[in-house]
Image (tube, rainbow, N blue to C red):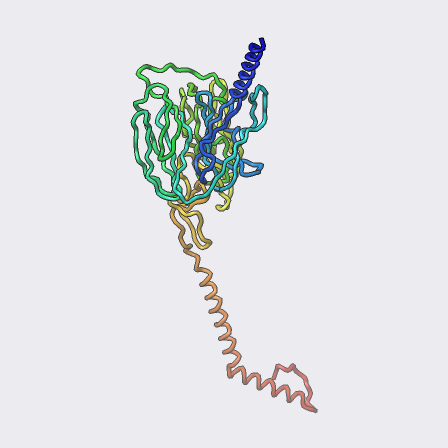
Length: 428
């Protein structure tokens, strides 16, 4: 009897431990020490009561109360949340926080933030970053690679269809590589090799049979990952600016989307995404002459999401600022072949705005009237010297000397005793 009771207790304890392990939240970082700008890859598992979105993830430097701005993304695959981010360029001790969530841990419902620490350390070795850091693809994959500390030849492989290529990436610049998924049928879980790195990917290839179209009934907040999901911009008055955002269908379920903007200053290159189930980059342009608060609206048949756009307009080129760099396109002034500022005595006849501020595309040129002040000073000197010359000449004129002597003699005569003064001193 005692053995049976002991066995029951042992089984019960085992079940409790097993349940605790199953319900525990785990946050697995592929690397806990990264270089500036490198790609952070994170796998999160757990019993979450709320659906996680990219907004639940934040990266903080030390004890900072504010998130560090980063490019990031989130997909869900086989019950796991796969989060990636291009980490900041500032070295230091950082923490990844998953916030504003509800989950079950050890049979207890919790709302505490989940924190995982990592470091960013500078080094002189060559390395790369890549975006996205996790991939869900139903069509060709667009991969952005940036090289650090040296020009690099990067070998890219997709084993599932035998694709392999080598691309040159120059130091400090980004290169976009398009990876085809031809030859892949059905749903394939694989890894894309990028140099010494590996990117987990779920690829939905074309099947020999017509795939069944599954229309989504999810809320767009749950279905779509939008990056960036907000724009705060300071733009140069009257100049046209281009921006992009990325829409990812996390679950790959079909949905018809309509896109429109709240303001005439915001012009979209696409207004419809029919049977959308993958990934799309949307471009829009802004040309503004005054401040405004607007948004881009993304709507389905039953739901909608908004991307806030806050615009301030300035005439001061040094105040131009983009809170979010464009996706997959290097729009920095240097990449466009321009210069970021001109001297006070220079002008630019082809101006634009880049992702890092004001940009002169034509190169700075010396103002044609910049030497006018020199000629002005020369003219003033000529007038002063000329005036002095004529004054001096008039003063030393013989006629003026005789007139002065004559008046002096008359004055002495009139002041002599016995002489009556009847007229003014200056008259004969």
